[in-house]
Amino acid sequence: MREGWEVKTLGEVADVKGGKRLPKGYKLEAEPTAHPYITVSDFTDDGTVSTRKLKYISDEVFEQIQRYTISSDDLYLSIAGTIGKTGVVPAELSGANLTENACKLVLRPGVDQRFLYYFTVSNEFVEQAGMNTRTTAQPKLALERLKTISLFLPPLAEQKRIVAVLDVAFEGIELALAAASKNLKNARELFETTLNTTFTQKGKGWVETTLGEVTRFSGGGTPSKSNRAFWDGSIPWVSPKDMKFEVIVKSIDKITHEAIEKSATKLIPEGATLIVVRSGILARTVPIAIVGRELTVNQDLKAICPNETILPKFLTYLMRANERNLLAKVTRGATVHRLSTYTLKSLPIYVPSLEVQSQISKKCENLSTQTQHLAALYQQKIDALGELKQSLLQKAFAGELTAQAQPLEATA
Image (cartoon, rainbow, N blue to C red):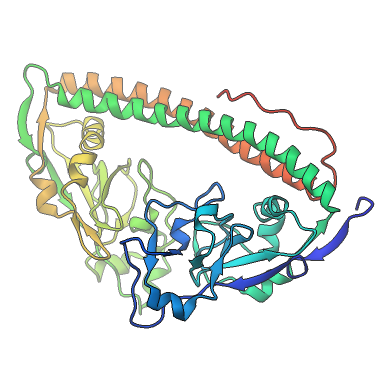
């Protein structure tokens, strides 16, 4: 540890105070009042607060929870739901009420606000707080635990010097991240745009039909959860949580042949090309190759098997092109979205000859390979920039950030 630095706990450098939930029987208001109420959903990834969907409370509610406000001199930290989002409240929201799912750090004299903010976005802070990720729901992070987190604290002048170095370096990193993220988005959109153009500009000889007329569907089910013997097998049992947009991730659950025989679930038939998520948080089409592989699914999924008039690969790209069309027909319930089998089967499509299907499939496959390669390169750059940020933070809080950082070129 460098000379003049001290080991301090978060509770020693700041007062850690929780927010407050609304009194029973009251709700947040969309119409602006004199009292904004900041929730975790208002916290942004860049350490500030979005006012786009800000909610408010009445004078009556404010009288009951007026002690639970946050100043622009404090730091906020989400402690429930999405844990670990930190930042500063903008001046125009200074004095706003703060949700019970967050706390505020009221800094003591001798502590620079941005220095402590940078510490809260470092891996060191995340590890000490026991947060392996900042995006998944976890139990509430206890305030007493936060108070015990330790850090190396230099004199105030050194804190400000470190902040100045990090500000310059992070500005360059953020510009480079923005450029890489834009290029990543463009690479993905190039493929989607080409797909839409290919399947909307139909040529001569394309025949109008429906998805149900050129395919057959196979559903799934759930074996009894009480019979643990059913769940001690080797056959993957896939549910929406195992699905991604283009691939199927490794299934956690595996069942036995006996479970298949004694439940509504069944082996996906050989020749199936697609699995469609038709019920869940987001109904979406997900193409995967499953020919010759033992696989079962739950009742929220449908397998689609093409007949002899449509090539499997052509069907895959056709469904990708129709993804937005299908999403527009999703029934949105309070907690679950559903895409009916009838909607899938009645989806109007146009199909050319098998020869043209083959040509289109090869064109789409080549473009998919190229865009995936580009996307991988841009994602690698984004990951590398994230690692660079953490490397700088590690050096900063170890007293090793001695050189003046130079802005990065915002190229990707």
